[in-house]
Image 1: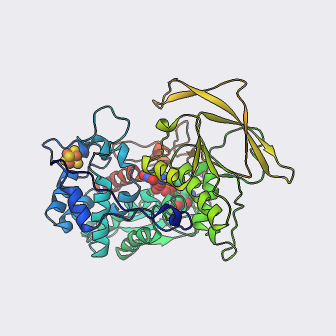
Image 2: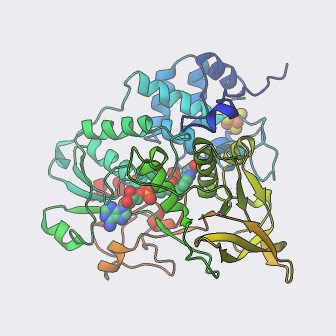
Image 3: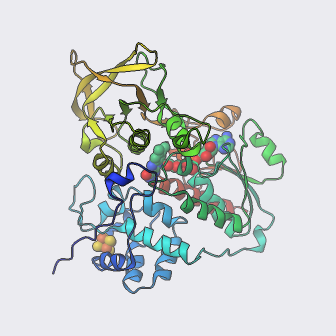
Length: 470
Ligand SMILES: Cc1cc2nc3c(=O)[nH]c(=O)nc-3n(C[C@H](O)[C@H](O)[C@H](O)COP(=O)(O)OP(=O)(O)OC[C@H]3O[C@@H](n4cnc5c(N)ncnc54)[C@H](O)[C@@H]3O)c2cc1C
Ligand code: SF4
C-alpha cells in the first residue's frame, strides 16, 4: 500500500501572525519513523547528488528507520556541522528533495511525494542537541600552534572555525556586529530559525575553545596585515553579502522606504517589534509593499504582517514581483506560509516611481505591468515592461529586497585582495585561497548571495586546505 507523506504540524495561522514563535513544529518520533519508512533506500540514491555537501541521506534515513538516532545524527554531522539549522532553512525543494527519485524528472521543484529529507534532518539535529551529542574534538598536537583569525560569524565563519578548533587550532572570530551568527541572527526571523538553535551551535564552538570578538570591524579596527603581525598564520574571510541593491527609481530616498537588510536588522537584531521596551523603532504602516521574490522578501513580508497585527492594524502587506509565482526564487514553503498568513502578491509588476504623501514620506508607488520574454542568464524568463501600463498602489512603508552585494569595508582597505566584476573575492576553487597567501574566503563573499549550506560547504573546504597546509 502506498504510504502518504507525513505532514508536519504548524502553528495555527491566526495565532502565529501575532507573534515571532517558530511556525513549523518539526516531526515527533512517530512521525519521523513513518516518514523515514517511505524512503525506498534506492540503489542509486540521487538525493545525495542534490545535497551541496553530499550528506549520505540514504544512510541517515536508514538509521532513523532502525531507531538509531545517534547514528543518524553522526552520519549527518560527518558532512554538515549544523543539522538543526539546515533542517530548518535549507531550500530542500531545490536540492535533495528535487533530486529524490520520488520527484518526477524535469519538475521545477520537489514534488510533495518526495521524502521530507529536511524534516528528517531537523529531527536528527534536534535529537543531537537534546542529547548533547556534539561531535567531540579530535585535537592533533601538530595544530596546537596554529592560530587562525576568522572574519565574520555567519554560517561560513562558524563552520570554518568549528572544523579548525576540532583539530586543535586556536581560532578567534572577529564580528563587526554586537551579536554573532550573521544572517542567521539578523536576517532570518526567529519564527523560521529560533535563536536558541543558533545559540546552541555557537556555545558548542565556545566549548571547543573558539573565541568570539564582537563589535570589531576588520579593515578599520585592524587590517589583514596587522592580523598577520598579531601572530595569526591563516585568515578566513566569511564577510557575507550585506550591501543592499536598490531599484534606481525616482523617489526611492523618501522616508519609510527601507532596504530589507535594515528592516530585518531593526526587527530581529534590535528587537524593534518590542519598541519602546527596546530603543529601535520601525514605522510600520497600514499599506506595506515589499519589492522582490526571494527569501529576503518573504521574510520581510511575514515580519511586516506580524508588526501590523501587533500594532492592531488590518493585515495589508503586498509583495510586488516582476515575474510570476513559479519564477520566485524563495523557498516554496516560505511562499506558502506567507500566503496562508495573508500576504498578498502582485505579480508581473515593476516599480517605476515612488510618490511623496502630503505628510512627507512615501505615499504611493507607481508600477508598470510586465510580461515574460525569453529566459535570461539566470534561466528564468526575462520580465519586459509594457509601456503605458502604469498603475498605482497606496504605500506608507516599503521594503526593498532586490538583492545583496558583497560587504566592502575590508575589501576596499585591502587592494591586494583580488575581486571580480561583482566585487566578490576571487579564490582558487580547489582550496578557497584568495590572491593573498594564507588568506582564504568562503560563503556569500565568494559566490554572491547563496544559501547557508553552500556557505558552509565552501568554509569546510577552506578549513581542510588550511589544515593540509599547516
Ligand atoms: C533575509 C534572508 C533570508 C535568507 N534565508 C535563507 C534560507 O532560508 N535558506 C538559506 O539557505 N539561505 C538563506 N539566506 C541566505 C543565507 O543566509 C546566506 O547565504 C548565508 O548567511 C551566507 O553566509 P556567510 O557566512 O557567507 O555570510 P553572513 O551570514 O552574511 O555573515 C557574514 C558576517 O560577517 C560580518 N562581517 C562582514 N564584514 C566584516 C568585517 N570587515 N569585520 C568583521 N565582521 C564582518 C557580518 O556582520 C556578518 O555577521 C537568506 C539570506 C537573507 C538575507
Ligand atoms: S530520499 Fe529519495 S532518492 Fe534518496 S534514497 Fe530515499 S527515496 Fe531514494
